[in-house]
Image (cartoon, rainbow over all chains, first blue to last red; front, side, top):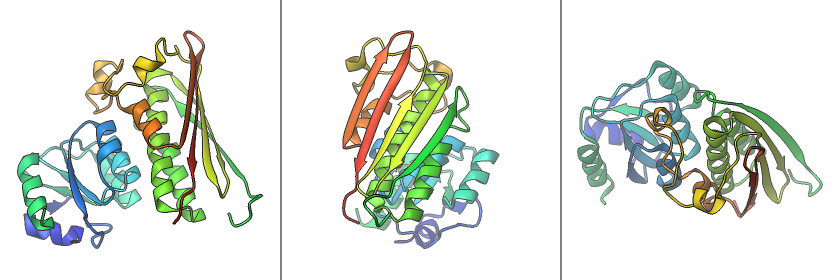
Length: 111
Length: 146
């Protein structure tokens, strides 16, 4: 499933036009501690978090996450949005809690 | 990187306490490795381990210096600082142990996974530290199949 398909299926909203909409989502990860995500988020994952900082974008990029799903209507910082667009990181927004966003992602991935 | 004699040296200076810039070295390294055609799995390991090192330099050491040596066989990285040093390396290497201040934790850091991640994602990891003098780390990622 691509990031674009996941976005539409779960009702997520792109924070900006998706720079890599056809990137494949292979798994999911939930968590807000950056080193925890860095060490455990799988390659190609949809990472559900409330961390909308430039550091979260760096972790998503370096860990090769397919998409960062910013939950609970958490704020995406302006510098983070700029960095994500510069580095081609997909970011989706949702008011759903991380658990509910993850449930939707899991269903779409057939997990 | 087709010739076994090929060697590329990179150097980065990491500023202290600037968490918006921490990650620039690892992002640059990742981009270079991808351009040079290193296998994706090796690129990911090197980028993750170097990012953790950068964050540690920014949080704990007041900044520091990173050197990277690239050859077709491996990615070798040295991180050197003149920070406060680590009194108990074995304790610092245990998952979940952190001395990061609260303001750093509020940014999502300080989970006590930095050094463990660096060891986990590298094929060789060495650390030496002296209280009041600084910390020196050497990490290497062997290049696996593409």
